[in-house]
Image (cartoon, rainbow, N blue to C red; front, side, top):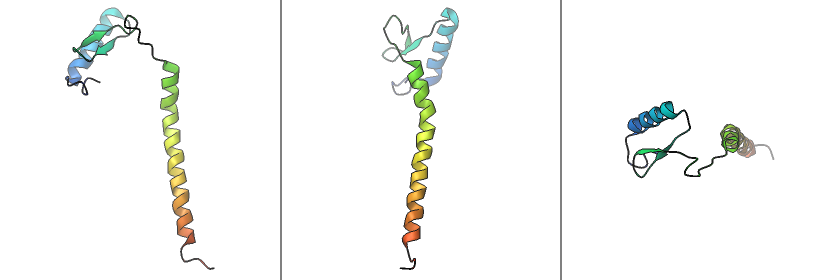
Length: 84
């Protein structure tokens, strides 16, 4: 997010880590002015369980898509030059 907003990534990470160690509360990145925000005060609620499931599901979906691609290639290869 920091890079997409035109800020230095390392500076943003250090800022976030420092703020977290001071407060021991989750902090977010203010992408308008490089700083930190409190997600609770800004009413930003992420569903951690849903995001965790998406991350777990992504490799499985990619694997299934690659498997379908391999099956399609094998099917095309078998149809060429075979006895009819």
